[in-house]
Image 1 (cartoon, rainbow, N blue to C red):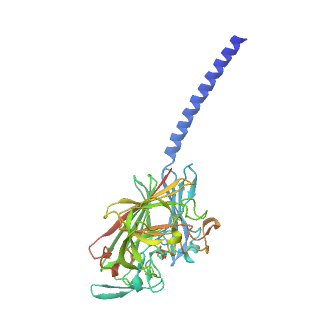
Image 2: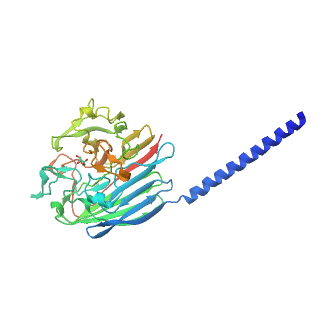
Image 3: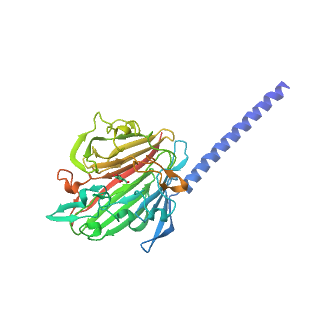
Length: 383
Ligand code: GLA
């Protein structure tokens, strides 16, 4: 009996071991197969019509299953679906399900803004002795390209695949005189969803007359998932010693002020909500990035519950940190979710606001024969 038991025990151990090894082998085969099958892809569907033109929605998927949905109306990123620390995917940008919702008006959700992102005081500037008057759409000021900026244009779009990832190249010709700007401006914006889990944006422009140019992406992010809660418990770090001080209409006074010992200081990580009450109206400020025109990690933001991290890398000298202060629950977003105050934040990489009227700020004037261009990367990680 004892002998039988011992033998039976041995047989059981061997069988279990054999089954286990076989299972592991199958698992690794499955994983390998899955990886091979998990190729990047791009699909295109009709989203509707604007300005009498067809508008499409493109779905980009990288090798790791991250998804970006982009429409050629306003070059808008409508969805960005990324994993949390447990591998659960969620949409982390604010936006709408239908084109009609975008056409009905919204605060630049996920759009490319231009020709001049941010404000130009009273919509006026002088260039080569000529005074130009732009459309004013933010009280007395010009904001984000005017009444019909790049965020409301129907762009041409072309899909591409590279070793790096899968992408969409959008182009738009902004005609001479559009919203008051001089010169025909040819703009190209390439979004790449890389296999390193980044949304990379390459901006290019050329003009036939001198003109101010300051193009940016106006994505509203919430790393907990869009529409779930506010962003006040996200931990934020910004590599900036200074910010541009603004007046009550958010136009820079020209002063670059040190952030040290103020609620503006994010040189070390702080919760967005920690000192927001001390900043009248909330954060809506241009930070001066310590980068000297080089590509650096300017921002890191972390949401502890999901473990999601977003890094922002840019070659631009500034970034507007906007804490979604004007969101007020009137926007019903994807899946019927309501976007209340502080439900998203934006990091708009840019030159400083009102640069055409601020001789001491880095220039934003593009001349014929010159090439405008820069890159910003939104990178997604977990911990
Ligand atoms: C930018 C501006 C804000 C606001 C938002 C959109 O971030 O700086 O003041 O206009 O866009 O509402």
